[in-house]
Length: 306
Image (cartoon, rainbow, N blue to C red):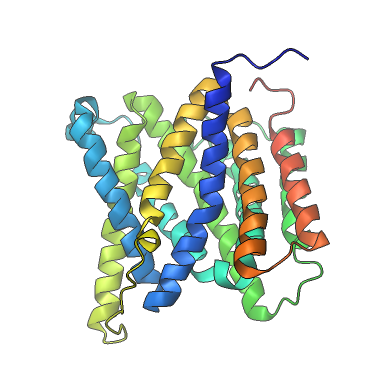
């Protein structure tokens, strides 16, 4: 087996880093939500930080600023601009669920929902490639993804509330597939992957700000006691880094290879986070679910070029 070309090694490292960050970010959001006693406030802080990253990006990318000025002329359906709402559910689900189900099961459930809904997204032609037939390998991958979510619960005391949280994360993964398809469609149409990222973050921040403001006006939101640890406010920066890293890695390695690298790193990091931070050793069910998810990702690209 010939050694990997030198230039691909750093790009693979970028994808692996994105996966590691993907395991850490939900835990940070969950801890912040617990400390301020509000998942909504934690998500608002997350997207506020991500919006700051967008502002920095716009300051150094005049081409993206020009694309955004011309947003009314973008040749895409207007509903694709709402993809950022999927990001809201992703962050909220992490803030609500990770403390109860753990990072490992969060990762398995998230990828299970993403892979399964990928069938629907492709069949409807929501992404940039138009309608794609439902190939047998993709159906097999979806079945394996569903099985992975179920198997990951074996050996764990799962009550009704925990099961609902798992389903919430599955839904977040499903919306992530929709979000990725919309972003890809916009990026392909306008020739700039940073433009849909800016729209996503802005839409998500506006929606969260409105929701938190309405909730606060109802008198049900107590004044938070903001923690002083700086690391609790890094969730938005990490989220922005994940999107940017996957954009770079997918362009150089192909979507399948970048996704597999990210998934491998995220699951490994998730086990370590659960074990080291929460003293929660992975059960055989979680390990089996992780293995099934990896097989599902490989099946998605079977017979296709990376």
